[in-house]
Structures are given as structure tokens and as C-alpha cells.
Image (cartoon, rainbow, N blue to C red; front, side, top):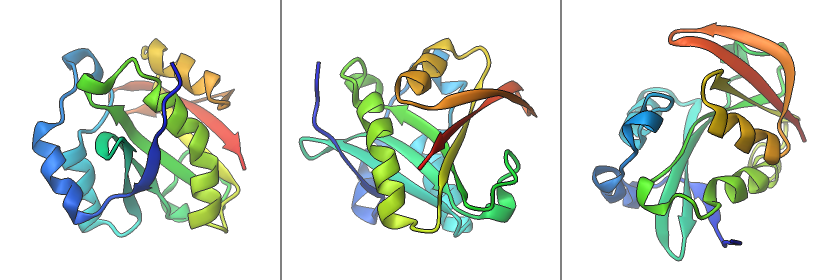
Length: 159
């Protein structure tokens, strides 16, 4: 199924969607919910939330962490970190996540012209996400990180 999405920066009008956003428990263990993404953004200027929209409705969220000094997963000062990608459970199985990931390089190139790479981490047990990231063109280079909740695999996407 091919869908049509828009990826854009979060704005205050999107706050109303937070209370309606749902994730199954088996997915919630792997990511931050939108309310936490927004809360972090309000206290950390480097953590920029984005929304994924379809037909005028917010169907997903993620954050881009833009401070190179805070990116512990790479020495590349021009890398940007993708964090907490999720799709509301009511909108899953429609390829929104894949389409957003495929749009992400252009979003980063347009809004963060100094960046040349997207980095993300995924728990080694989250096979659905690992397969999704590979399908979207992210590459695992056998780099791991000992995360707070277990081993995280580090994926790269050159811009």
C-alpha cells in the first residue's frame, strides 16, 4: 500500500494529538511517547520534535537531536540523531513509517544544511524496527552501544 505523508516540525497545534496517541505495550518499551518528546523539546533546544501527517491528521512522531557534541554514537560532528520514531497504533500497517524514513534525508537536507549523515539506534531485540530501517536504506556497520535497557544497534544513512 502506497501512502502519502507530510513530515514537518511539531507546533503547538499538535499538542491535542498527544492525549489520543496510543502504542501497543510491546512497542512502547522501545520508544518515547510523544508527550515525552515534547517535554524534552521544551527543556532541550537541540531536541526537535517532528510529526508525520496523513490527510491532515498526525499519525506519527519522532525527534531529531541536532547537537553534535551530544551525539555519543558517532565522531561525525555533522551527523544528526533520529530518536523515538513511532506510528500511532490506529495508523500502523499503512507504510507511514517507511515513507517517513524515506522522506527523512530530504527533510534533513532542507532544514539542517550542515548535516551529512543520519544516525539512529535500535534495540537488538526489536526485529520489526531493524527490518524497517534496513528497508529504508539505513546501514548497520556492526557498531553497538550498551544502552540503558540493553544492546542498541547503531544504523547510519549518509546524505
